[in-house]
Length: 389
Image 1 (tube, helix red, strand yellow):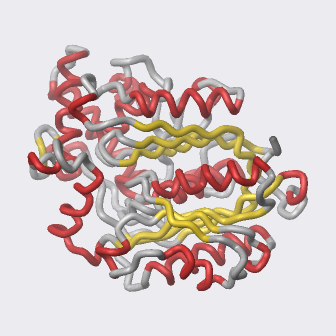
Image 2 (tube, one colour; image 1 turned 60 degrees about the vertical axis):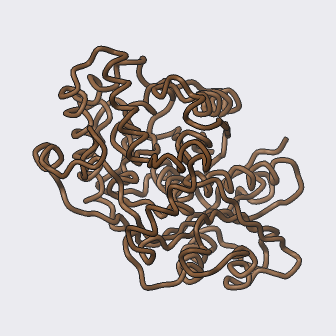
Image 3 (cartoon, helix red, strand yellow; image 1 turned 135 degrees about the vertical axis):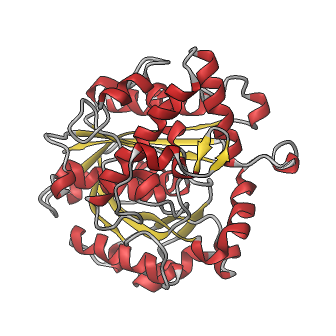
């Protein structure tokens, strides 16, 4: 199997955009091509995440239109991936596997989404379609509701007072907003305080407004290539050292919501393929759709012992200058969450961190980074381990 590298990355500003999904993706893709020193006509395939284009713009079958928009050849296949919020990471992983196998030498992966145009009621309804249609969505369960249950189960399981847990969760929000201030592409670039979080409206007990990530518009793209043939094309290619993906059934079959089997299996595979362990990771972009999601992900990824993440967060271990910086981009919480593009944006951040190009939010001496993206309520998880080549 061949070594696979990321040559270049591109990303739009996240937030509320007047651009179409095609226009946003073209902006990100052209930046990635420029960084990679290749032309669109050189790309042999496109793998793109997009979840709700039919509701947002009445557009399905978006992948071939994106390929045409950036000037790819007709013989280059373009495929849309839908794995809820993990769509773009799954697209990146499949692109890596195809290059690694020798099927292609150079391809593009990424994602695009325009969620804000739907408005909150429709967006909420469509996001819920990522849950099980018979036993979850039918009964009125929502993603905030699921993660509210996670928080209560976590507090009970580890005998942590709920107010202590919610304080640690608030520190996650404060940290990620502080990082977002340093990211010119972030949706929210304003610091908040613990009191801001704990004084915000209740959404799904104990999750409050500032525990929840926003709906965002945006796109991101990644150029992926065979290392042997293309490593000299750019000064700092980044190796895709390992990938993993896991799948799980509906929530009612997952008895312990603090332990997601799909994430633990996916991370284990990515670590083993890369020949590393959790202690080797220098920087992480993980799926903080809600603040409690960051808490439990850190444990399932093996960064902290089970039940120990809140204390580590309170110590500042996950801050930019901490032992293991988490979400230096601002995460979904502050950078934003255009669901079909999120995983590619996480990849963008890790690549930039490993190349030392993040300015004031740069993690010192970062050599190995981890991407973690969750799709739906624990149904799909995809992980990437990236390292300097």
